[in-house]
Image (tube, rainbow, N blue to C red):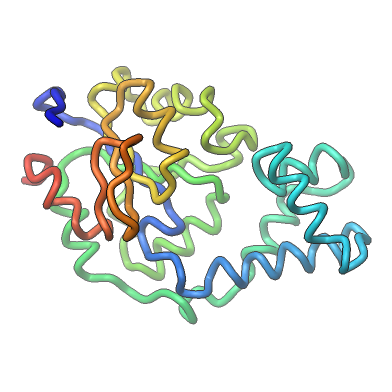
Length: 220
């Protein structure tokens, strides 16, 4: 299928976890264990009941944190985020010179657009060696804890990046559901997934390193 897009793109939005580095390295599994520990230790939820509460919070509110905020207003969001992200990142990810080289070849402004918080995002970027490749980070604090794929946050991301036209933006994520609202808004979408083409997005690549194969005109 042929897609018609403007010749000039000015802004790239790029997801963090599972996009800049692949899933399956064990990082998310440790974060998940720490979420369980927080709910048990800080909220007093019995260990056997934690999975049920997590599933309910996730499906009703979009993220476990939003469910906790709604049902346990006494919990400090900063404390939660610091607790669940307190893991040794270099145990799972390393500096990625090839990714750095690719990002530096992109003349557009580049923003991290993540459901995580800025501190976690900054740590990941530092370990990967690409922190200076980005113009900014749009995180849960900036979005008032509304997670992707809530439609209202995509125009807000444009505003935060100083971008006026969605048609001049590209959004890259490892979850198709997060890309659908961006596509509806007018952005070109790229899914990072080893599981094959997804018809709900414009392009699918197995790794972010493969971006030049589908959008070669983006590069210098």
